[in-house]
Length: 278
Image (tube, rainbow, N blue to C red; front, side, top):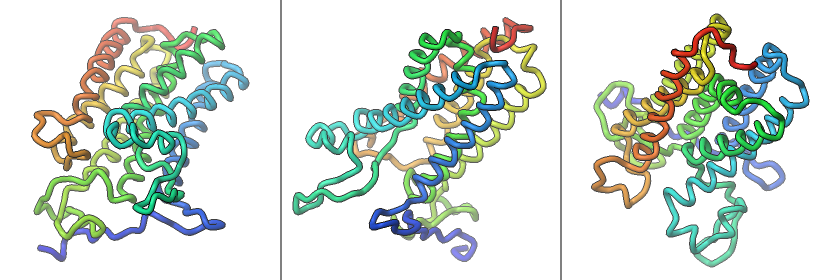
């Protein structure tokens, strides 16, 4: 059945721009952020919030996501390396075997770290601009699955976060890794996140005045992390220390988010007839 498998041999680099590589990861990451920003602009207008507060939300959100995702990868997944190469945490470079630094882009971003960074930035934002924190979380929760879906597509283009071997006809052979048909776990997650986005956004478009505060955030984060938890069973370990663990790092980090999401989802259901903004 080898002929039915998908032969995946895509270069992560699109082209060179003045000597710097332009990568699919950066393009898809940026596309996801841009689409989320455009949707948030519409939500802000619908909720009668100011243009100025929206512009600041984009800045706070982008910085929070990026710093959190970068620090999350360095601390959760590869602390041993980055504790010895702290400069590479904050700069898009990596030291080669000869000890010279090469521009590589930021090699490693963790979604759970991005979520923690985003929530931290939004807490600061909500205090600074006097918008209820839970309302800000709800607005982000509506669009977050869309951004996460694009990040998983970026992982697919990088041939990273690959799945276990399988004989399913839709298996991918990641030629840059090996010649073994594998679950396209990144694609599974991307599809799941797209579906979650359409569900949550659809609820907002049709029922937003009859939903309690916190429900959008809770449903969004709970569903995404439940899907992440389940799909992790189909993935290869990302780092060596996960070998032999009952649950890998991605699953362990998902558990508190699932609990928090379910709490806010249930709380939101009990507080019907309340708009997401006062």
